[in-house]
Image (tube, rainbow, N blue to C red; front, side, top):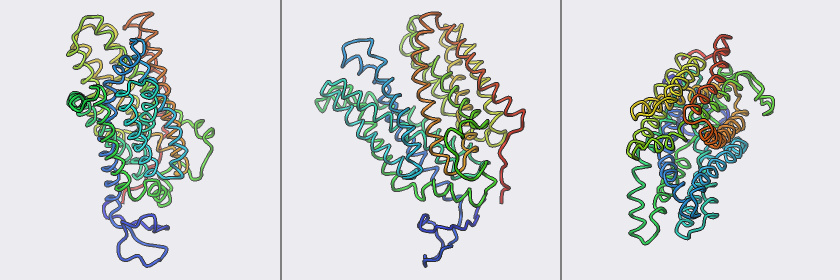
Length: 443
């Protein structure tokens, strides 16, 4: 696609990429389209890296803050639930607003809300106010949902043959946050104490600073708006979208391809969250030290993000259905392996595979969803998808605790394996039916 020339009907949307002087004509030529798509993807990757570092730093201490401010151990899970609730509400809000204000405006605004939320949470820790702290987490959760939708913004500036890789490159940004976010918790806590504030207030400064820089990066660098680029690609390559026009959300979610995509992503999230959220309790009951728990979670995070480029290439080369099938099979194997496991190495391998399977299903499912939508349908449908994902994540954490209390870690892991059958069966049907979007010929 190098040096491809694209005719733009509305030249003022792309002021930074025109060749020659703008003379008011209705048609101008854009050179090197791949440079536009590459630039947008790089900006989204950097934004994801900065933002995720802040999110993960805060996640590391949210439960501790909940217990500290309330004085009750039972409140440890409340901050996480409130945070995910903010994510779910935010995903729907951004989904319906980004079509009007653009991806650039929505992403930048979301990260500004994250800056405000981080500042409120930090102030609440210093002022010892639990309600104010939870309010800050709602805003941070809304920011997280906006950042997560960035993967779809990368997808829509690429043709179907490259969407999997585009999504995976943005998801890969979370690897940076997963590595550096926890590492910044100790130093920022020390810095907060040096400044005379509570130690637990420090990690929220990571989100404040990271989201602030990310917002500036999005506002200044995400030009042209991915929404406009996506519309132009759909006009030039009508075969790259499943249909033209705009359907209602109720019509969209009844389409087979959309159902397969949403079930794949939502169930992958549920299956991943259930063992992950209980493994620490399981290991503590077995008297594993915190260092062992840290190794298991690190292995899990490595599986979730580090192989994103691989999953993206597989999605584009093998097809969405095959990679979803592979991801769900890997998750089933990981859950079956985790069920009887008590040793450190076995749990590390099981949780690593769980993260890897999630990544395959998440990237391929997201690409499949992007394939099914016309430009005017993307934002609202993708926002609805992420709302379902986050609500499922929140509910799964509650249910996993109940199942663990009733039947133990093994029963909980087997229940997660059983849940993996839903996306597996649908993906096999999708693949067997040969339902694939037509990829336009490469120039």
